[in-house]
Image 1 (cartoon, rainbow, N blue to C red):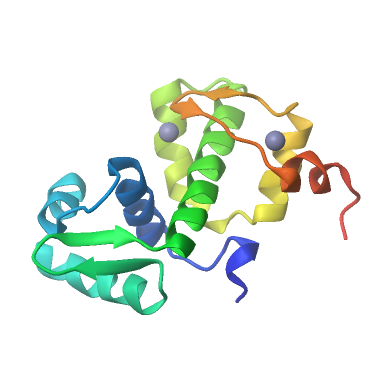
Image 2 (tube, rainbow, N blue to C red):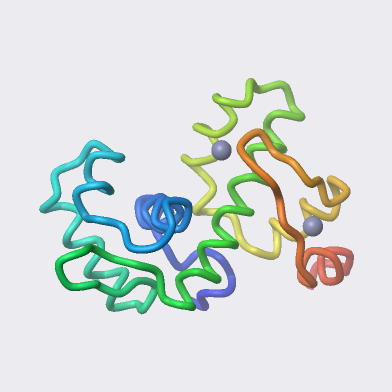
Length: 147
Ligand SMILES: [Zn+2]
Ligand SMILES: [Zn+2]
């Protein structure tokens, strides 16, 4: 599956990558474990898979940090979350509920769809949980016909 289509990662991996991105720098495994309320041993396996796919790398004795690829992908993951939760807010959900709902299905939404929704909503700048960034993909390609 092509990483750029947006469906390369499971919902759990999406949440971990967003968390590492939003925390910034090197993040300890124990921090991730406590943020998601799971056992560190289960985190280790998922992080090893993310490292094998070159989204993150291990920093000995300190934890993990994003690679360049991981950072670029995380930017998309954050944008996707914010666009989808804003879409839900505009359809009547409370911001907090919108965030939770979006987190459950966002990993199934393609980049192409996110770009088109962004365009359709007029490239909004602010979502319930942060600023939304725009790039050529949503500004130019989002306008195009579905192909
Ligand atoms: Zn949110
Ligand atoms: Zn946009």
